[in-house]
Every structure is written in C-alpha cells, then in structure tokens.
Image (cartoon, rainbow, N blue to C red; front, side, top):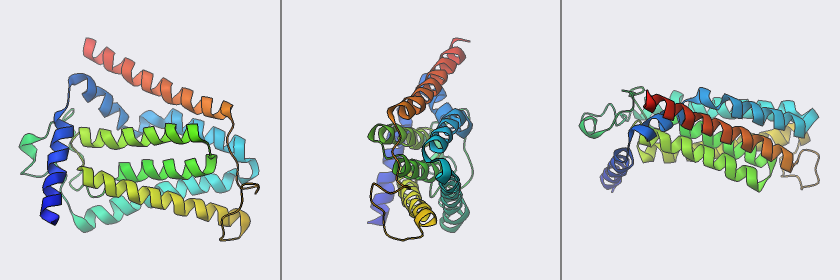
Length: 228
C-alpha cells in the first residue's frame, strides 16, 4: 500500500511539473521566492497592529512562533529524520523532472517548509482577522506557494500535503497560545471578548490590493524577462 502511494505521488508530481511553459516558469519561480511577498507581510502586520492595538504584541509573537515552529518542524526535524530525496535529487526522477532555472534546492524534501510556513501563517492570521474575504485571499496565497513548489519539481505532493497539515495545526496551536496569553484561560472565548477582533472592509482592501499589486509585478517582470 505504501509503495502504491509513493508511485501515485511520483506520477502526480510529474503531471504537475510536466505542465510547464517559459511564462509559468518565471511566474512560479517568483511566487516561490519568500522575499517577493515582503510587501504582503508588511500589510498584514500593519492591519494586525491597527486591529489589535494593545494585544498586537502577543499576536505578532504568535506569528513569529508559528513561522519558527513550522520551519523547524519541517526543516529541522522531518527532513533529516525521514531523508526523503527531492525529485530533483532522486536518480529515478531526475531525468523526467523539468527544472526551473536549474533550481534543485537542498537534498531532502519531506516535508515542505514552504507549505508548513505559508499554511501556518494562513491559519493563524485567518483566526486572528476573522474575515471570510481575507481567509479566501490568504488561502489562495498559501495554495499558490504550495503549487509553485510542485511545479518547480522540488517537492512531491505528499511533501506538500504533510507540510500543509503540519502548518495548519501549528497555526491553530499558536492561536490558542495567543488566547491564553491574553485571557489566561484555556477555553475559547466568545465573540464579544476583547481578544476576538474582526478586521474591517478597509483592512481587507489594503491586504488584497498589496496582494494583487505584487502578483501584477510578478506578471510584469515575467513579460519583461521573456521579451528580452
């Protein structure tokens, strides 16, 4: 059964990685770059401080802890423990994997730190902001990052799935820790509590605008590179 799942994992990776083009190579390479999303991170921090004010420090610490735990769980524990070769380093897969700009990443890929980090941030901030529109925006951002790693051939879908589940769980735990720091109670407070805030429409527009502008910049940069 395990071998069958592994074969399915490889087949799905090749299907995703095989659906490539010069245009999407550039787009996915940019999406996969964490530095590209700095404006989005800053907009989220701005909205978080604007919304939570006196509790913002606890919320920011929860975000930092989520990233730290998600990254260390994936890269610090899982990758050296399981030692599953990335498709770009697996001799049985290398001949069939399409590389983007020759990028192969490190030796081991289980589980994906990109997936754990992005899904952890998405889960935590969705719980903090409590806005459906924002949840869709940040969910699409996490999904795009996850897909880009498979498109580039550096992670199997199984790596992504396990990393995403770990990130979601860690994000939820850090949210509960935030609640405990603010209320000193383990139970979930009701919606009227001072530590439960919802962001307003203006805040959603700020984050969505930064998200779309970043994506537009990626498309513009891609078109520029291909036209040279």
